[in-house]
Length: 330
Image (cartoon, rainbow, N blue to C red; front, side):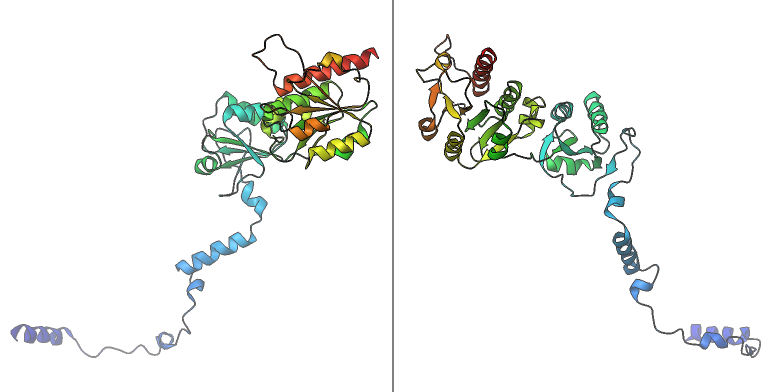
């Protein structure tokens, strides 16, 4: 073809003669470079980057991952970043008001978890200040993680320590003479439980007993209701209240049940100066049948209005006050 012939001619015309040799200067270019490196050994390969990340994770300690400070509006608290998915242990108190109230009452806690970029209002600021004063660890986490722990967290969560229960034997062994012990038969409201613990501490009871099942436990709500009394009042969980009552009787305690339906009133109780175990029934059902049968005496607290009733914590407080007054006079 004409186009091809003219192109060949142009090439022949541009060549001015034979090119000179390199004189052996390019000999090294002919030398082999060895086997191809593995992908993870090539600096710019994705496999090498993954290997580098894995090596950093292996050499970095857990404390280093959780204590890196982050400059935010909460610089005074110096919170650390929480590893993703690291859920706090123990009971959770969530929400700005609830967390602040728990910290004000010095409820034993393990850590305070705060969402990053949280809007710091007066409640959050005071919570951080109280946590620092109590020596409580403060950690940061993504807001999604905090809301995953509690959807109504408002960006702040407090983890509560599990309560360390005592035992019936420990309570009775430390009881002063005449002994005074409070037993709860199915009290399910934690606020009632906390209020009873507070009254028991105020009137010199040796401890409070409760059943393990179908009863309130020492949650954050109970801690707050006790106003700090739970920190100094021994509380025990028993598996069978009827057997515990039998054990109390063997130790010389008179078992007195509180029941609003009883015809015997608290004024007729003549054994206030003796060792006593007061048994308080549940908020709705009162004393269980077997528990009532085990009691040496069942009394009621007279009230003026027949349509009203006293809740468990109020009835317990009145009974404890009556016993305390009788012992002071004796």
